[in-house]
Length: 235
Image (cartoon, rainbow, N blue to C red):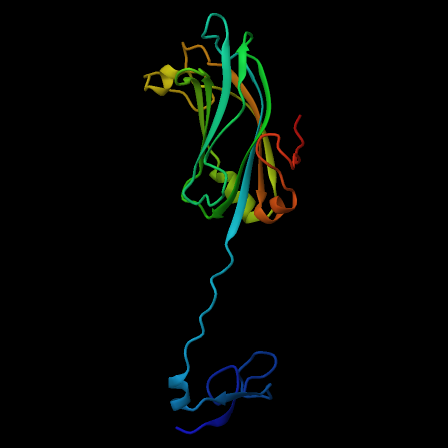
């Protein structure tokens, strides 16, 4: 077939299509389709369309304080907090397991950390996204002892920020689950709640900040209290 030009409308082939969108054969708006020679067309390679841009979000967790942490070593505890992100779509450079500094010889169970945890480059959508917050009694000469654990689902926050392209923040004050609960005690309770008949393993106060990655890139913040120390600044 040779090349050529065909005059037609945005309706059935050869049919006049009016400007008002009807197909009653009245006056219409005509445009031209350039017909490509079939031999030439067979030699043309299909255009590779780029995939849609990936939506990414960033989590920041600021550990403010703990209160009422049990005293395990002769009336004191070396309090340390660790946070572990469980998310297969996490593509950032910081490790999934991040730790605070240690409050040595804490005799009240109340410790001030002001420590930032950062998880950039989480590709959306995620299949699941959870965080574990662990409280340890740090032992410089042996392994640390787990004092309590909180596990919570952050996927809904990630989905909201990805959908709305707006950052959000939440402030939390939660109970640690004691070690007996972690080992499968029959007395069940929701994360952050105290099982009946069990004393809590202390509490933690923290802020959760979730950003679209583009906004996080403009509001840079480093791990801990390193520079840039902002959004929010920590002392």
